[in-house]
Image (cartoon, rainbow, N blue to C red):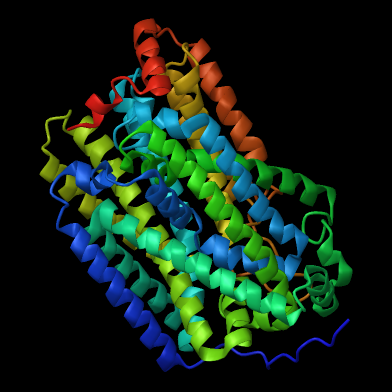
Length: 548
């Protein structure tokens, strides 16, 4: 086994802040120019929400991967592997397998049935008002959970690169990222956001691929040698090459892993910002092609994360990673600096920043569209509002959501973002997926079943998260420091032992959807279900529904 490269002293800044700021500024100027150019065509709700349905399957697939490969994928998973080894890579496996569920069960059917949002599908044969309201509330909650992860990643990344120290400086950084995110959404709409996601996905694959080849070259292009050197450098030794460092320490941890797996595999098909992307293509065939392209791009990237994570374990080390702002989230930037110095760090950091901006823009436009299209237009105004007013409400909502994301990101800034995203997946799998599947495939599904499923899944998942060790009561036995969102170790009100609620909340939501439907006196509209079934499977009538 070769000697491990010596580590720098633990530090809170890497590279040269002036160079990092310059590369950041160049990227922001370029992407803002793209967004402003795309904004010229945002004249209708169809343009603002669905980019005029003008993107091909290949373009949308790359954009989907850009939307999906968030800060959790690049920063969080690399950091999880660097600190936990094999158990960290399980996130990659779960995130990728989830796309098979999306491809086989929802992508094409959803595109054929809806117009702009998930609620269009859920309310197709159910009562519009209550179902659209419930779907919008669920969309807003899932989006906010996801935004917490992205804002936490942005704060840690920028603080690392600019040498920002202290909690106040980090909070200001998160607020600045939030303001920039709001500008992207207000100006560019879905078309501008999509082009940013395409560019970001290509840069991310290039940057991660470059670092992967570089790391392997240091190990003689031998994956076995890399894994051996990484294990030698890890405090856990060879245990990082096998399951169990995190999820095998106790029976409770093993159950927590099952819960996490359920959330990751089932959550993607219920993520509102992923579902909304299926409406940006002109046909169901292109929607299907989108998912195939996304699976290939995402699969290749997750293979890169395996090398990057173990590379950071070997070349950077756990001590230095834990000493940096953002802790595990800083592993990939620190590895870039170790490999290529200031310039590579600046490029990788700009790509990671692009990742965060693209994802938060997609999340924000989805959440704002859901409120404006589903609640304001169809529930409050009963469909009488014109498209210009609806888009105006969506933009106001985007500002409010951005501000809430900043506040939440400040509290969550020290959490691993892959872990935070897993919580968003659990909420999505609990509140959205059961209702979507029941709506598409069960003729006896009723409005009561939809409401019980959405609100029950949403409430149970959020309640269990609030009273879990994620929020309070988890202490690092080695340091005595809090590992929860509440940093005060004297505050402990958790009674639910698992970090992820999926194993409870997902089956509960399916059960509530069934129970609400079989106990409802609502008459089943067989003709409406037959129309929905034909449209979802064949696309007949879908173009008429989306043409205006």
